[in-house]
Amino acid sequence: MKLKLGKIFIDDVKFGEVTKVENKTLFVNKEEMLEAIGGDEHIESIEIDITHPGDEVRITPVKDVIEPRVKVDGPGGIFPGMLSKVQTVGSGTTHALKNVAVVTAGKIVGFQEGIIDMSGPGAEYTPFSKTHNIVVVAHPIEGVKQYDHESAVRMIGFKAARYLGEVARELEADEIQEYETEPLLDSVKKYPDLPKIGYVYMLQTQGLLHDTYVYGVDAKKIVPTLLYPTEIMDGAIVSGNCVSACDKNPTYVHLNNGIIEDLYEKHGKEINFVGVIITNENVYLADKERSSDWTAKLTEFLGLDGVIVSQEGFGNPDTDLIMNCKKIEEKNIKTVIVTDEYAGRDGASQSLADADPKADAVITNGNANEVILLPPMKKIIGMTDYVDSIAGGFDGSLRADGSIEVEIQAITGATNETGFVKLTSKGY
Amino acid sequence: MDHILITNNPLVKDKYQDRTALVFLEKSYLEVLCYARGEIHKGHELLTHPLSGSIKPNETPYKSLLVTNKPKALDYRSVTMIEDSIETTKKFFSIRDRTQGLRKDLLADFQEIDYHLIKGALESANK
Image (cartoon, rainbow over all chains, first blue to last red; front, side, top):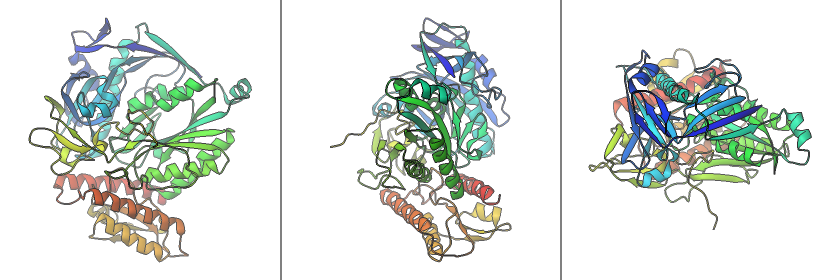
């Protein structure tokens, strides 16, 4: 399967009379966009705002971040099973608007969604301070249930990304990147001397506000399966996860998964990157046993020499991570696990809720308990009423001058467990 | 039915008390885990992860979990998992206890999330 990803680099975003890209500026017709994304019975009103890197702006509470993309050529459409038909995607040509993101914001549950600061010290912790953000704030009708609200805002975000992505259909890409994964037997024949490497992509699937969808299927209902990596670049996996801002994978991260990009970079040179195994992180322990058994079975079945395993979230998924690692290692396949830490404010406490001696190659993306002081911003998109209760916040977090003292777990993407972050680790 | 639902969440109690064996505790998150540890030491096996949900143990007051209903020989995996979870919970509480004095709407949200987490597990358990 081969995908050409055409990147269109955007330098600025403005409201305008016609939604289009001109001289690297994306113009957005607000009324037309509202028309394209509105209409959900659970939503009373929607506001759209634009903010840029360096602005003294704070966006909170952030639900999802999504990159606008459009399928230009090849089967299927973007976000299959959610917005497009369920046809298999990942081949042909897709265009992406780079340096731009749709951010959905607004209270769903009063405490979990994250913060994006567009400037100041907090901006250093989130990759989404570097994108021009089209922020969609959806206000629910009175008395809406949390799951209806989450579903409505989730779909509004995808529709917004599809609406904006559509302008890229006729544009010439500034850069085209090709990604190709051949059928297993062909790739093994082609690269007989390279180690066969797979990626075990763990998806957050614990329940309400902790969900991920694959081709529209609630991933807690799946058994582990195989995907071509390029399917994920076309939106085969989307986020319904609102919880734990620092280490949830927004849809933007699924579309731009850095582990997949890096494995492709080395594909055919140092390694043979044969594909992605997706698995889930359920609450019921028998589900965990089944999924980790099947994940290990698939790594063996594919004849892999090594596997990278990334997790999403905190606590319960630590157990899935360790189960996957242990069972794959027991097949004599080497693993590297990718995670983050809740190691206390001084970083000295036990980092994960589970552990095993076989997990001897670990990449951490930071300590989510680290505390940061976010200075006041000139403008708030969304609301800060709930900051005292946000994950990583506490009573008195929001100060009278508008500054906020929080753990970095409150910042969207701060310790993302696919490495889509700026934090790194050093050994001394 | 081969499980017992242990919870301190009044919403879970309302939803399941007529349908499933249930122990309702008017106790804290940590005390629910400690009660479950006692049951595990009596030979009940853990059926759900004690740290279900990405909401941190020092944020939500609510916890629901499932154990087997008939005690058998001590299950060491359950012992390790509940001990690790209690240790993790204590670590978060040593940073700050945020579960006291929460507003009513936040309590309702936390109850709803805990309910949906255990609902998914019960759907798996009742297959």
